[in-house]
Length: 342
Image (cartoon, rainbow, N blue to C red):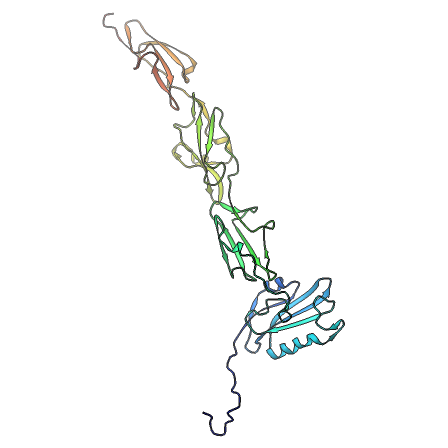
C-alpha cells in the first residue's frame, strides 16, 4: 500500500547491478589472439563489455576489448551509423572502418562484433575432448570457444609425432582447434626402445613386442651352445629407466653386474658359446678325449695296470644348456677300481 504523499506510479530503483566479466585486450590482430589475452572482472560502474575493431584494409585490423560504463558504451555503439569515408563509419572489412559493440553479460564480447552478428562463435569438433586411447584429456570448457584441452599419454606412450607425453590444443572462436600436430588431433602411440636386439651368433632372440614398451625378450642358443650365463634366463625387457625407455635385465640380477644391467647397445647382450662339460677326472685311468670337452666330445677310458674298469668304456658330453658326461653304450659312471685279482 502506498504511503501518504507518495506517488504510487513512481518507479522504484532497481537493485540488479552486479559485476560482470569481459574479455580484455589492446590492439590484437585477431579475435582469437584478443580472447587469449585474458579476462577481467568489471567494476559495478563499468557494467558493459565493449569491443572496438579498427580496419586498415587488406585484412589488417586491430581489436581492443574492455569494460565500459553502460551508457557511454551505448553512445559509442551508436556512432557505427555516423557518416564515414565509405558511407557509414562502421563498414566491416572496409578501409578506415571503425566499429564498436556493447553487451552486458558475462564474457558476451567473445565474438569479434557481436552487435553486428559477425564472427558468430562456433563450437569446435567434439573428437579431441573425448578420452584418447592410452591417455587422458582435460578440457577447461568442453568444445566451446576458448576451451583449452590438455592431452596426457599413459606411461610408456608418447604424443604421435612429438617427443613429449603431453599436448595442448585450444578452441578458437571460428570453431577450429589450434595446436594440432600435422593437422591432426593429438594421439598417444606406444614408445619404443632405442634399438632392436639382434640375434646372437649361434642363437636367436625372441621378443614379445619387438622393441616396444613392455616387450620381454628371451635368448636361446643353438644345440651345442649355451649362454655365457649360468642358466637360460629371460633377461631383457623394454622398460622406463629414469624416464627413458631402455633395455634392462629384469630377472636373475645376481648373474649380471650392476653397471651392465642397462643395455646401451647390443654389445653387452648374452652370447652363445660352445657348451662344455667339466673336465672328466677318473682316478687310475688313462683317457683320450676329443674336442676339448665340448658338446659331443667323447672320452675313451682305459684303467692303468692293477685297476679294472666298471661302467662305460666311453663317456660323451651331451645335454642342453648345461651338458654333462654320459655313458655311450651303457648308463652309469666310469670308475677304475683296485683289481683284487691282480
